[in-house]
Image 1 (tube, rainbow over the protein chains, first blue to last red):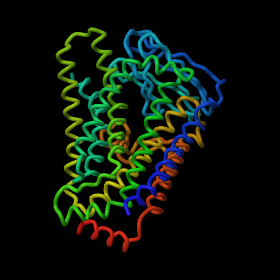
Image 2: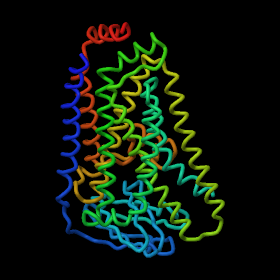
Image 3: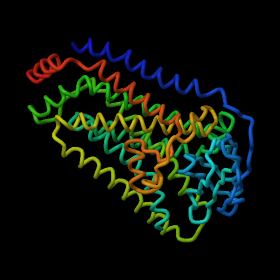
Length: 122
Length: 281
């Protein structure tokens, strides 16, 4: 009896692994629409510069976030569903959209008191 | 101090809820505390490592290393949770029968406890590395009041752990025969939510396209930033403004895990004979 259970278990586990591996692999090598509008956003003294960014609505937009502070910061927006840690002195790329017209708030989670900004999609 | 406490709490909360459910789902199984502790310790160590190499990880995969890593961690957890559920669908009845008649721990050596150990480790890893980076950032900036920061961190950690304990003790009050049904459902939704979150990371990295944009917006009714929204986000994958692709990932995960549970579940008659036989042995 036990051996039957074991033999039944393995292929299932394998199938589950293959499922997730498939999800990852199909996702990995083809960045969709690498071209497109690119917007720069800097983090300086735990503030975003600029703190209001206008982007076109209905299009995929590339956001280049440059952290000019020495400390790590996490770009975090619940409205945009984006969170990305950018370590000190580095830059990170975040793709957003296509967005409906409107205002989307974001913060630097590690310094939420000062690091606040908005993206306005028009 | 409060700001530090809130951020640490936010991160710890998610891991604590996951662990609370996982530990409840393994009630009465011999050796579970060893596996859970192993997952915890490995998770904390891995979180520190990931934080230390955050810059390097970020630079991989053409600058999208972090998203790929996060998505990978989430999908691995989804697989482990799904595997647990499929296993429980086949053996949960026997375990419950043994436990209520024997009233003691059961030896279930073939139980894939390692799967849940990995889930615990991954939950701690993902949230923990962010806590480490955050605390490091404050420490490195040399802001005044290091003592206050530590106090805030400890407070946030304690509050998070408390939430995990409430989850656990709330769940284990459920009679054992129902408990595994409840935890199976919780784990199913937990896994689906993680899959939707993983899809979000791959979209953020530009590897997967948005499908139909934001499908609905319930942030006016229940914001994801609120505590309730946060808890529901972790537990059932609540997203106030989900993308179509995330909804698809959610639905497919539920369908696949549920389907596998149904397909592999023994017929009730067989299960009860098997259960009574195990008890006699």
